[in-house]
Every structure is written in C-alpha cells, then in structure tokens.
Amino acid sequence: MQTVFFAADAAQLLRLAAAGGNTKGLDLAEVNAADLDPAQLLELDTLVTGHDPVAVREAVLTPARELGRPGALAQGTEERVVLAVRPALCRSLLGRSDAELDGLGLHWELRSWAADWDAERYGRLLRSLALLAQIARAEHRGVYVRFDV
Image: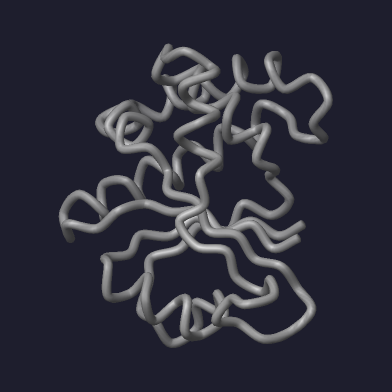
C-alpha cells in the first residue's frame, strides 16, 4: 500500500479523478506517508480531536473519489481511493510545536499497536501534516489522502 496526503481544491480533485489518481503535474502540496493504512488514520483522528471513533470512522471512510474500479474514470489494475481528511483534524494540528507533535506521535504509536511504525516515524509524519494543513488553510484547499491498494 502507498499513501499520499495532499492539499487540493475542487478543480484539482476533478483533474485528479481524470488522471486516474495520478498527482503528477497537478501542482499539489504532498506528504508521502509510505504504508500508512486507513486504520492508522482513524487512530490519529480520534487521538488528536477526541471525537467519537464511530463518527470519525463514518466521516473518514466515505470516499471522496474511488479510482481504478470498474466504471471509475481511471484505467488500470491498481485501485486508488481518495478520502477527505476531516477539517477538525487539520485544525487540531495547526499551531502545535514539534514537541507537542512528537508527544502525539508517541501516543499514536501506543494506540496503533499492530502497525509497523514507531513514535519517531509518526512524529515526522505529524510535523509534515501540520505543514500541509497550514498550506491548505493559506490556499483555501482541503486536505485529502490517497491510498493505493
């Protein structure tokens, strides 16, 4: 699995769908999250926002775009799913210090016991996501995540 977070507006999302989920040439700010899976994203959201896990799961796992499935705009054998990152999560990351983000990384590691990630890796990702959230806010874009399965 390959996971990429990115900031996009509505027009860029349409171009992304037309490109089969390929972000190259779309001038998007991106954060490569390697093999982060949807369960880890749910853990992050509930950890940072404190919101109900069931509500978070329902909101997060509603695909913004499904690419690579029969009838989708994309061609090919790889399935790509694009999900919207909840604005509450983005707002919660804004303005946090590196130390706070590293602390969240440690808590995230403890909650995601089955994942092959450690606190340092989570902390690096959180710092990158906080910067992406700043860019998205400044450019009036949403934050999305693409999972290549």
